[in-house]
Amino acid sequence: MEKLTTNKTVLDWIEDKIALVKPDNIVWIDGSAEQIEALRAEAVSTGEMIKLNEDLLPDCYLHRTAVNDVARVEARTFICAPTKEEAGPTNNWMDPAEAYKMLYDIARDSYKGRTMYIIPYSMGPVGSKFSKIGIELTDSIYVVLNMAIMTRTGTAVLEALGDSNDWVRGLHCKCQIDEEKRYICQFPQDNTIISVNSGYGGNVLLGKKCFALRIASYQGKQEGWQAEHMLILGLQRPDGKIRYICAAFPSACGKTNLAMLIPPEGYYKKGYRVWCVGDDISWIRKGADGRLYAINPENGFFGVAPGTNEKSNPNALASTRQGTIFTNVAHNLDNNTVWWEGLDKNPPEHAMDWTGKPWNGKTSDVKGAHPNSRFTAPAKNCPCISSEFENPDGVPISAFVFGGRRAKLAPLVYQSRDWNHGVFVGSIVASETTAAAAGAVGVVRRDPMAMLPFCGYNMGDYWQHWIDIGKTLDPDKAPKMFNVNWFRKDADGNFLWPGFGDNLRVLDWIIDRCEGTADAEETAIGFVPRKEDINLEGLEGVVSDEQLAEILSVDNALWKEEAAGIEEFYAKFDRLPPTLKAELEDLKARVAE
Ligand code: GTP
Ligand code: SPV
Ligand code: MN
Image (tube, rainbow, N blue to C red; front, side, top):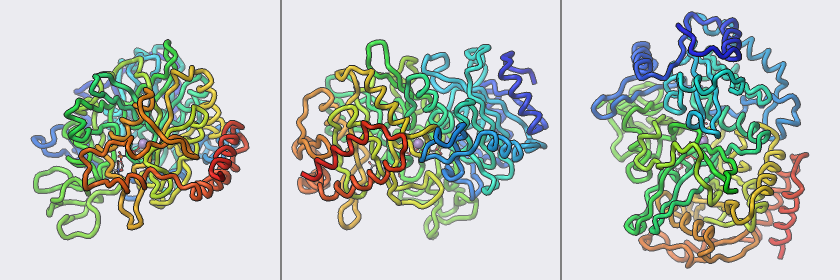
């Protein structure tokens, strides 16, 4: 097949990888609808994908991964920087020379009998000053078809690249899907990613976590911008103005849901709307007017399926009604559609579970869909996609919001006193682990800025980068910083806050605080709304005044214990910014009062 570029850096690198993995065939992805259609047909003919009901789910497909390959694998993810110190205490590190040797030994000859697909892709609108280009080599049609939804792919990307050497190299080899030889390796200094022995989501769609967060966070540090695990939403209020919020929550902690929120009825009638710019990743840089601007580098949503329904997230559900790939959900054999736990109260009787075994949803006590089953849906399908989604200059950010799953302690919302205190608030985020990564679920761990698994360099330096960015901002123009917790529970283990659409009530207070029009009480940890500052209209019988008071309460005795936990966490960092150490001392003094 004809090569789609004359860029020598690209051609030389590909030549080298061809010699290593020895494919039978080579296919350049040009991004055309005909090529995608042909690849879909091929994937169906080999059984890699199942075509779903064309009337009910047009252009939709189901894919099942190997049962040992259903989530990101943090223990097998490495930052291969020249020294361990550069990867820092929160990343797995491997010496680059050793890592290349080990990975090349695994990858050698692994494409024999297979096709190499060459995917040129752009993270961000093609040609935007925010955007960056990558090339992924893969032996998986599933990866090609997912990348064609999640990123901008094809010839236009190579035209934008021209002769430049500024692009990220990505090599993916499925090999035998051997979990003992599974490695997801980032080489930030070389703009290189190598992923072997997986066929699942974040491990293999190299534009996403590997590039847009791990490599890009390092690039941002060098070049003065930020790559963050953040959704971007536009909140339109009755005055018609739209303010933009970026929010960082750990995996499976509510970013997609918040980004596509539908306001409670009373608010909706008054003219409140939420517009989705992005649901997972933000690239952020300062604009000419001195404010911070963000783009979503992705072109689709790789969202958690379980729990997505007509009530919790109708916009996400609508996004999956065409041109979508479903991974590891249940297959309803009666009408050739898909099902997952929490879709509706009517599980199919004649179905296959996510592993491909016959499954009766009415009688079975095992789950039909894997808890980390996902949909890959085009962003353009989303009914609330923002008109600014393709804006190459991004959207101006009014607030940064951090959050996590904390059954106790963290109140519904609080605001930091200033930028540096906000960096501290982000750095101490802790959250219960979820099914998005292999390993135990429900264990509380520190996950600073929701970046624990995604920061491509020393987390201490990353915190310093946040502090340094703050120094370049006029305080009047800097986004205000907040922390939220939708997951606080009562003594019986029930959520105290209804969440989902009702989270708008909290966003409304956040924007009021940014505009200086809402009150708050200063506590040891920052500014917390008073009970009367959160509007409960329409929540009668759902959230009582006492409940609201409980979820807004700050217990200094518990925060004293928390401060001790933060101190222990910070002790791991040789490169802890002195500013954060000072913020911790300040918290300790305040909770002791
Ligand atoms: P990743 O794609 O892994 O980065 O996840 P995410 O942060 O986008 O999380 P998502 O919105 O997909 O939500 C994950 C889970 O959290 C789903 O099971 C949701 O039902 C649940 N969830 C989301 N928002 C809320 C909320 O406000 N309250 C409660 N109780 N659960 C929520
Ligand atoms: C996450 O785990 O944060 C995801 C899914 O968004 S994955 O692409 O698998 O990383
Ligand atoms: Mn994510």
